[in-house]
Image 1 (cartoon, rainbow, N blue to C red):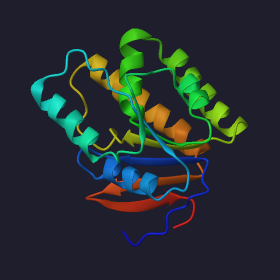
Image 2 (image 1 turned 30 degrees about the horizontal axis):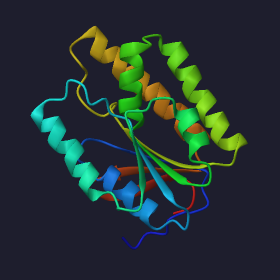
Image 3 (image 1 turned 60 degrees about the vertical axis):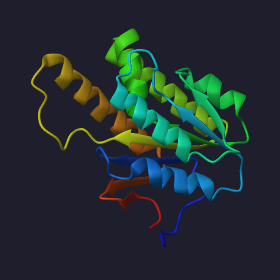
Image 4 (image 1 turned 90 degrees about the vertical axis):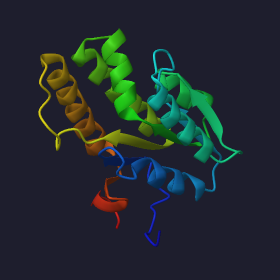
Length: 182
C-alpha cells in the first residue's frame, strides 16, 4: 500500500465505517509481520442471516492459510495468553462489544473488562491489532437500545485509542493516521 506500517506498536487500532477497508488494511499489516499471526474473529455464529454468513465466509477466505484462527471466543485475556508470541489481530472490537452487551449488559463492567484486556496487553508486551467500527459519524439510531450501543462503542473506541501506540481511521480504503508514526 506504500504506507509505512509501524511493526513495533504493542496496540495498533484501526477504525472505520462499514466497507471502509479497515479489515483488509489490518490483514495487510498482519501479513507483513515477522511473528506468527493469530486472527481472533469475534462474531457469534448463532443467528446469522445469509448475508452475514457470506460476509464471514469472505473474511475467512481472505485469511492466510498459515494463520491461526480463533472464532467465537470472547475471553480476550485468555486468548492472548494462549497465543503469546503471536501478532494478534482482533476483528472486531465492535462485535466483541455487541456480544458483551447482549450477555453482560452492564456498560461499566464491559468497559472495565476492556481496560483490563488493554492493561494485560501492555503488561505482557503482547502485539495486538484491534479493528473497530466508528459509529459516531452515522445516523442517530432511532431506538434507545441502538443509541446506548453506539455510545458504548464510542466510549470503548476512546479507551482503546488512548492506550494504543498507533491509531488509524480507514476511509474509502485509505488509512488516515490519527496517532503514531505516519
